[in-house]
Image 1 (cartoon, helix red, strand yellow):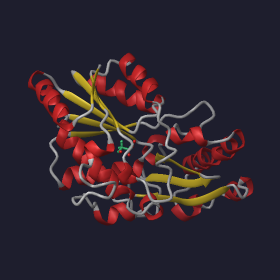
Image 2: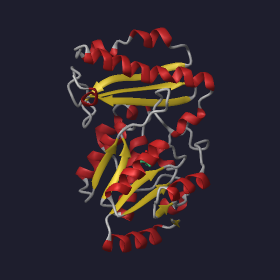
Image 3: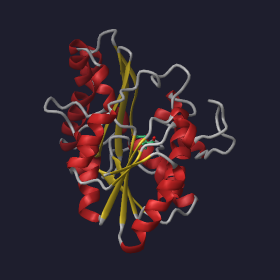
Image 4: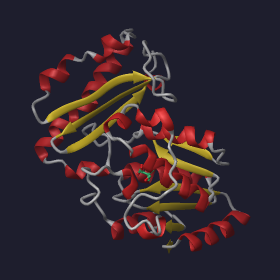
Length: 287
Ligand code: PAF
């Protein structure tokens, strides 16, 4: 695996690869888990060459968020990527990605507009401007044929679908299924922050969604009724703070009154200091 640290070198290597091969990109912030590896495997199946990136993007962290303590496990990540047959790893420094900003925000940023203020965007102001900006830069530098993102970050996916459309990126955006731990918790690099006690509390997210899936199977479709999940209140103690539980259109993130097939059921909560998200698409569970 080639590990590349500069934009210029990455552009060159990717340009060469694209001459004879299709190129798949898996952008990450490192601290890799099985969810990331599922993206890599899908990319390997669909492209001749797979490139991954590891970059903890300062632009997508708010002033009181976890940029400093975000897990950095570079050696271990490299070993996993190597095992999965990734050919090119782009791992730039913040100064390489945002030169001449002296730690400040760059002048040019991609603002996805209203969609970036919905759901997680309402709780993390500026987050999706940071995501859209770094992903647009990665798309320009690497110019992949396909780019792979996890369905777990359903809001990120909606934002990225919009920027691909609005800015005419010539690539296919591929959403890959959410991966869960044995106990049902959606895999996330931030799960490492959870204490054993927090981890039990965190299962309220997946349990709530399972209860909603059951209700949908029973034929309940009304969004308000589905979102009134009594055990959310019963089980939650003061370490669990619900941010949202809603049913929305997966492309616009606007609320829908009924859980029609294809609708996105999404939940976000704080468990202690850790912010967690989870979701499912109604189509996945059927009528
Ligand atoms: O999903 C992530 O890990 C990040 O938001 C991404 C897409 C790599 C951009 O920094």
